[in-house]
Length: 307
Image (cartoon, rainbow, N blue to C red; front, side, top):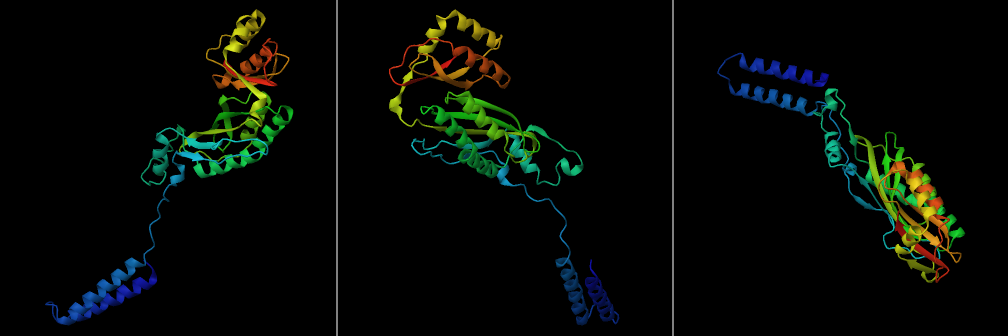
């Protein structure tokens, strides 16, 4: 209660006592005093400082899909929706974000509860992805395009963002680019970004999809996967090298490659079944460069196959 309220209440109490003194029956003047006292109390209550509270949690922490726009490169055609990114979290992430604004939560009682996967600020993720796709990622593609004009395809990337907004793990879930150099450049571009801090967990997951169509489809012939798998089946040296690369690992390695008039792969890329098998993927890509294949009926043949 401030000093002004104290003075006002004191005066009202003295006035009421004066009016009640002649008779306890409460003459009309006493009613006036009671009303004055009540008015003073109400005035003080309206000027009382608001009790400190907890700000409501932002709804932007909720997991949802976000479109991050299209990319365009002169001389090529892009898909209508080449880049799509969204915060991808466990269902418990939204509950954690909601509890952040509840002063009765465990955190307000001095207990900090964190789960493994939390939410991440969707709007900031969208802006960062758009900036990367218009800047360093586009630069990665253009470098590869300068070396091989037939370069095209799409990628799906999963990033795990840790405490401090740093990428702690990144993986290609799918890629049909067919260039380990370009794929590595793209991943490094995303790793260097300072991402938003995960909320309600030790990490958050971000998924992004984007790609490029070929400059001239007439320069490329598409091969079925069987064209490569039959060639591997007839080459014992390549089979042996691939088995050594796999080293007992399970799962399918999805690989995309380009074959020129020499009947050999001139570029290869792909995705591993798990993050810890990236080195095995690099080994397989190297082993496949010696595989003898048919001569394509166009300047370049493109093929995607599993190993």
